[in-house]
Image 1 (cartoon, each protein chain N blue to C red):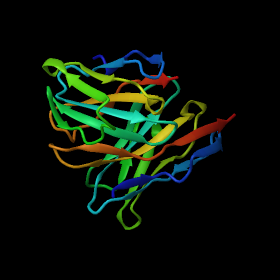
Image 2: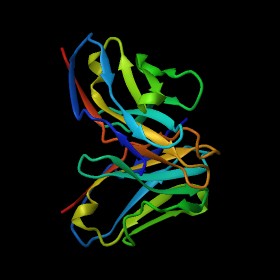
Image 3: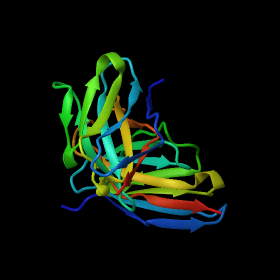
Length: 114
Length: 115
């Protein structure tokens, strides 16, 4: 069974540009999460989808971040326009039916904003 | 506010030595507790979890953790470290229920293993 995959693995962009990160969860997992780790600090929750619905987006930093989950399958996280402080590693995780089921993480996307 | 503290940023141990990584949490009720490991170039891998029951939890790769309610701690242990255990370790607390559930992570402990 394939795990959680994320694309790209690395992205380097300039301040003001747009970047879109993609996450493919484990097949059949209803719950999808985005987390971010900035500058070696703790990994922080961004948002939680249940199928295609945003269940909790309390961790989204500001309105420059937009997450979608089309048809309850893969998810994208768009940053527009990117700022220097957006640099970090963005992790995606998925879990089965219950949100309290174990979360399986992808390898992350390392975003560098210059 | 709920928080997770991993007081050791770096730990260095010799191969074959025992290991204990500390984790303390701040939460009113008994939370779900997790330890994840991130090896270089890899994603986060679940080592073990505690939901309820026996407070000593066995995980993969020979790791175990003990939940101590009185100390609000969930320390990770391994009796004999292998060079392949060099990685970054994250303690996490699962908070909320179905409608609003998330993991709160500590800042991580990087383990270095001396040959």
